[in-house]
Length: 177
Image (cartoon, rainbow, N blue to C red; front, side, top):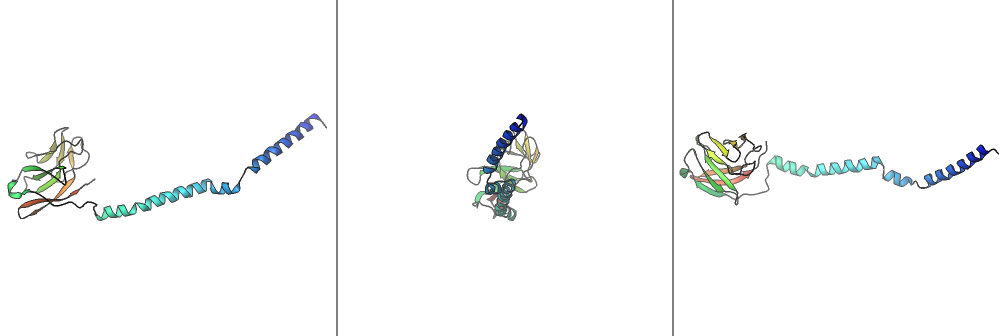
């Protein structure tokens, strides 16, 4: 036999041994369990499960159901707060809030902490706006939305009721939009 044929035969025997080693360590069950398709099925299934689990929270938010039941707190007598004036109060616990009797005669109340850096907000009668003097933030007194300055979010609304000349705080709404 020639030298080339001997080397080819030896190479073929070695490569056959290596192929046997490659084939021996394959386990088809593992391949079926740990492949891309199985991974994608698991990932999609987990995503769907997480998505479905958030549905009750979305429905609850859309229906307007709230987690907190706020107590009814007396703020002041309406006759003690003339038009164009404001006063501060605490609601629901120790959070600072502001009640404004606008020049138009409307009553509105908001948390008085600016949504930018929590500085106090004051009523400015001349311009009929709420002002945060820390960074010149202005809020619309009618709806609490920012008009000018760094604040990007509106002030949380304090819901109020007037009964027999008495103004009550009855709830708080965090709005985003």
